Image 1: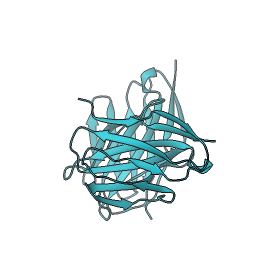
Image 2: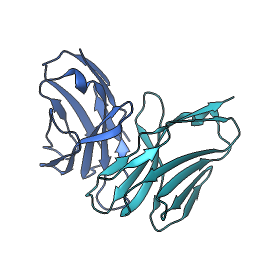
Image 3: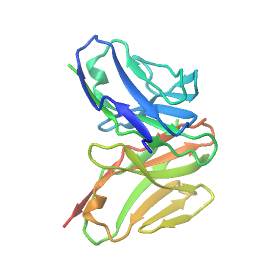
Image 4: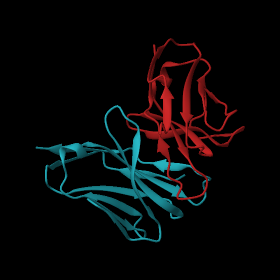
Length: 113
Length: 112
């Protein structure tokens, strides 16, 4: 049972470059989320998706783009990376109904130089 | 908007009990959660409590909820070195679709 995976686990990129972080889940959960984790800020929601082709902004969406053409995948793209986007990014998923708990991937550590 | 607050650090001796506290502001919270994050890993769901409950026990973990004071705590009995991690409190508001609001996390250090 692979669960939820993220790739790459580590990425170094330069300011201005486009970079895509991948997220894949095998549970067929309807909901998927992208968070960033920064010291002193805890987890902040970037974007979420309720189903394929349905996405919505979270708390800190500026500079990010998401898509969800298939239920199991939810890529996050930084169109023109900035140093302030250096962070650890977590993807999570949640099934519809139930008790709303979210299940997290292992994270991607992104450094923008 | 909703806010969830936790103290940043807690140190305990191995074998003692740990109590991690959390306060939240949203009176319409329906579920509250505790997650554990070990170094270099994602968040792992430990337990959750529904807002109409006062207490939930699961092996070494006891969750207490004081809805009047909007205070949530996680007690870990017989704390072990493997319990050293960051613990996050999170809440689900009745006003949000599926989003959870997370606290900043409490770094628990277990001393031998």
